[in-house]
Each structure stands twice: as structure tokens, then as C-alpha cells.
Amino acid sequence: MYPLSMIINSTWEQRKLGECMNSFAYGLNAAAKEYDGMHKYIRITDIDDETHNFIQSNLTSPDIDFNMDVSDYKLNVGDIVFARTGASVGKTYLYNPNDGDLYYAGFLIRGKVKEDCDAGFIYQNTLTKDYDSFIKITSQRSGQPGVNSKEYATFRLNIPCKDEQEQISKVLNSLDELFTLHQ
Image 1 (cartoon, rainbow, N blue to C red):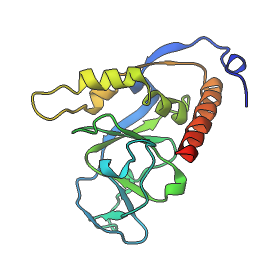
Image 2: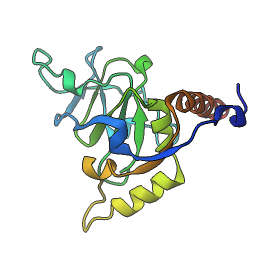
Image 3: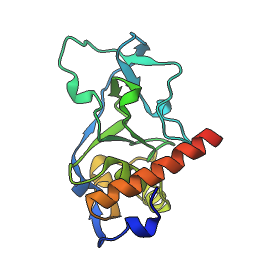
Image 4: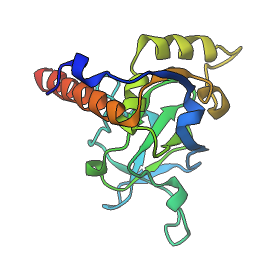
């Protein structure tokens, strides 16, 4: 493990989240059904409020025809999903391949992180007070709180070169795992 002073060497630049993503896309507009043993469905309620991990109990599958091409709704390495509405608006999940084939639901927005950015670093920025403040201000609506993909794209974050993003992400992810073990 490196001390932070050895990790942080480059100039950081401020970028919008949308500049770090290839795209944002809304999830499947499908009901959940009993888990079919292959296709897992991730909804807002399937993301743990504390750890932001995918909850593996009470698994479901999307109620869709898998003979049709639904690959656009399957999460891949480097994907982050964002809750777009309700009391959980702003909640995020970074896809973990150990979670298996995950298809994301309609109240989630998937961001595909660009190759020049580290998905773990971008995700860690969604666990900050700056992000919480952004969500609180941006989600204010006359009805239910919400943030759409265009609004998410405007979130500003400070970002170093990719190598330093990866190193910082590793340190922060190790701390997250340590905290989870102690809980």
C-alpha cells in the first residue's frame, strides 16, 4: 500500500461526470419475477444502502423474453448505475463481475465509464459529501425527488491522470472492504 503523498503527483482537472462517460442509458421497464437461476435483476432496492453492494438474497429476474436481444440492459465491467428517483435518488452501484449476469431496472441509469477514466475512482466520487450536496440540490422537484441522465452528466469532480485514479481507487476500495468486514 502506498502513502497518499506517493500516489498524488499529477495535476488534477475538474471535469463533468458526462465527460467521463461514453453514455448514460435508462434500464428495463419490466416487472421482476422469480429468479430463473441465470439472469439477475438489479433494482434500487437491491443495492445495499450502506455498502452499495448488490444484495444477493431474494434474487429476481426481469420478466422479459431473453430470446430477444437484451444485451443493452446487461451490466458490464466499468458500468455504474445511478438511482434516478424516489427516496434513494443518487444511490450508486459499481458493477462487480462476481455478482454474475445483472440486468438493470428502469429506475436506474447506467453510465458506461470511458477508458481514460477508472470506474472505481468515478464511483468513489459518488460517495462524497460533494456528490450528496449535488443530489440534494438537483433532485428537488415539486413531486417525488429525481435526477435524470442529463443532470447526472453535469456533476463536477476533480480527476488526476488514470494511473493515479487507479491507485487512489485501490486504496479507497481496500478501506471500504475493511469497513464492511468490521461491520
